[in-house]
Length: 425
Image (cartoon, rainbow, N blue to C red; front, side, top):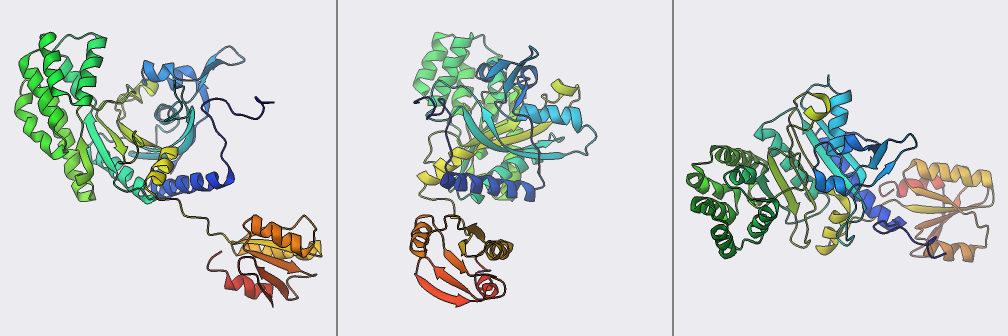
């Protein structure tokens, strides 16, 4: 019985009030994406493992839920949506005019040692801009990320950016094993400059490389990174990456979001397909990112042997709700008027319900068949706004209306009553 009454670890039920909040966030994202020209798509929850693991790297692949299909093939639950989008574009949208703007709102699945910060099933809302490899494309995606989070009510949103090739390019100058490279990344993340100097000395790394790491690590505003160009004189590719970030920053000034864009040299995304800018969005009250993304110019090629540049982001819906709560905000309550119809005649009651629903109100038929007092008790407990008592034909005779909150009763034509609530229904 205990097993029957609980869900598996890392999953949860959504009660009606929670679905209202979740639905509000999802619909706001959907409206913003649509207004920017991003068309919604949907992929299967279960796909062949080979398709889902293209380009994502071993860490995310290891955390996927995999199982054997009836025909013996290995399939898995999707762990993110960019690879499925790349598959769709490569297989079914080859002739679509570029740039292609696509969006999605769906559930994804990942195993984790702890389900405190993220459940094994969670919802993502995201976009992909496919077919352009320019700073303007990256800037549009970043501006849409800011706009989307603001539209659901979040305040003080900031985005940290870096470049997927930057640290890789600098590390090519040295020979570090995987463990030491991990230690170096950790020191950069902690901004522990004293320990970083000691690490460089112990591993006999070039002094000029240490200066580069410290210079890039100390830069916070993206506008400050140009000061690191002299340090990057021996790393022309790294200079090129930084110029790309500065170009994106300049475009975002026109969007009005440049002042909330920050540089984080230590930023890395766990997914390996990124080739250009990478970024994470956060708010001060939440300890982990609520969204992120970046550029991935080589991923679609791996599906269809067609080189197509692309960039995009994904937002975690549940983390947006956590952030709203942490900021003392909430999603707006549903404005639908709830009307209970209590009728002596089934035909009259159904006609009344039809009229109620046509004006956009929520109509419920009283199926309990109890006396007025018990009907009123139920209405108060169930959040009903009005009770309409119908004798025979609600459309030909006046009906009795009870305002549940004020206890006020009036007898009016149903049409007149519905007109009076039309603005709030």
